[in-house]
Image 1 (cartoon, rainbow, N blue to C red):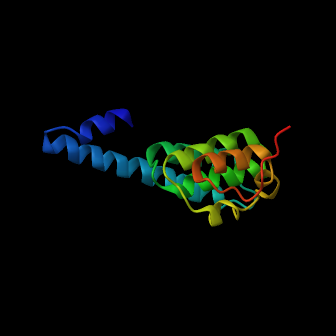
Image 2 (image 1 turned 30 degrees about the horizontal axis):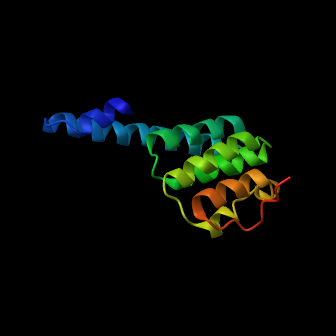
Image 3 (image 1 turned 90 degrees about the vertical axis):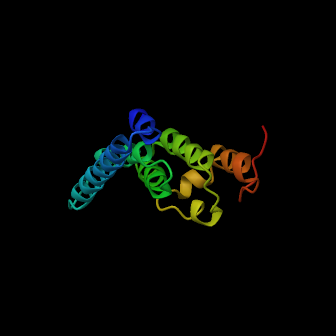
Length: 133
């Protein structure tokens, strides 16, 4: 992605166009694989989560992928990963607290002090108070 970002800044028109096409192809390929894995009766959550993680790299301003990683990681009880992607989501400028507190499979995650500390740090308005011990 760094190489594509370099090509985006190129003064050569064809390099810019190539970068745009490659970025589109990569995102389409990832989306197709997400659809393929998710269509299974019992989807492989780890594979699906990995695809969403890759999507956060290839399209960092598409917040849906971050939300999916947080949801899937919480479903698998991998709260460390969910917390990391929560912070990355907020670093990228996400501000919808209503959606943050309604992400599927995150009921236990949302009441954790770590979740609310990160929300408080970036949005200055966590729903649950962080109790210092």
